[in-house]
Length: 410
Length: 193
Image 1 (cartoon, rainbow over the protein chains, first blue to last red):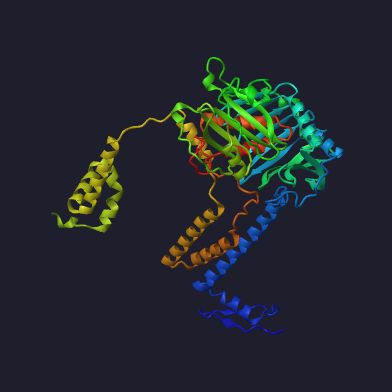
Image 2: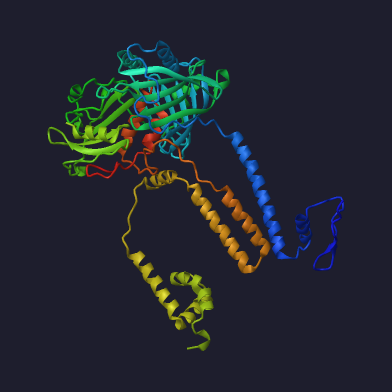
């Protein structure tokens, strides 16, 4: 075995490596030069290498740990989809009975469940604790973002409660009895009529649950192709909705999916979780909708109470009036009345909120306006009586569709 | 003039922190004497004191505005909406601090500290990664202006109406209306105010 030559450092000390330890000369030379600890260059080099080794090992351990704990991340959906280019075209003459059955099971799952749900709209994300039971009742408790943290939402068959933690206010909407069932029947009629198509288009496993993928399309009379509206991943065993994507012509609008879930008795869901008294005490409660009042079915009927109302002369493809609600006003203060006109195309909706513009806030109404694709817009328009009307639009229409809406308001 | 108190950078730097308190009249007698003796010889510091006095007088003479009762509540609500600092900007700050450490090490000739700073720099370069942006088409700007009560009510009604639909996604609708803010600038009505 080669014997390492004895060497001396600058102080005359002899350094001899063990004879059984054979090392290549460059490495041996480096180790021997490491004896010279008073030479700052070597000291700093060794210090840097040591720190680097610590960094890399720490990062590797942390990264491995992080990767193990990363929650379920569903594959990113395509950013944009045009018509039905990537999805099988369902039959519009004969709706799939299995798909319809699965849709109904989704609204009333077979078991109770609880878990963490994540929602993404654009670049905004929220996380909420989500509970549901076999009666179709649901509870959301917001965990993030900070603006919504602490908010609690109860969705019941005939009522809606929203506790706003930051303002300590409660919004309440009491629907007429049977309204939810009526809306479901309306959706099924749309499906049977062919205005909305639904089909089972795939199968995927999410968090260990086998899910069927239901895809909803909308017919657009002016365009031959169908337009994707939504995709639902429904657990085939329990009927729980595991993932929900909403689409419009521009692409994906929103995605909501479970990141953790427990079903059955282990979920710990009790009926008391869905009672209004389970909500935090609010400083102020407000009826968001007229209690137990069904919507009016035409704008003409609504104009009896709110003569200032305007409606679009032309609607985007496939949309029809869903209902008109009148708020406030009354014989004592008719000038305070406001209205909501809601239009639907199956999954997608357009809302128009209208009221007379305050005299101090009337803006000069331009001859032409340039609409945008923002999903909440506000503008003023003049009605047939020459009154200035404040309008708020909420929807997911494209720029041209919004322009059509604004240009034809009358 | 006392020649011992001609203009001296070291003295100016030492008395700088006291000038503001001198203007407010909260210095001790000894410090007041020191400052006044220095100002008699140093025109630069004297000019600075005069500017401070003029600024204070200007603020005292300006009109006072009262805020609304809910001003603090709205301010905290808007602060809650402030987005966190992007990760890449935080890592740039970190990089700056590491470089400051390197500069300090070079100045003091502390070679081991230089070695650690070099290791830190390499670690930052290895660890810094840009955030992956979501693939969903952005619809809403990240900052939300506080809407008027009328708009707020409309947004609440929108969420409630969505809850009444069999296929309504209340969480998505709520998130969307929370980010509602200015539309594209057009002459018909820009802000939601």
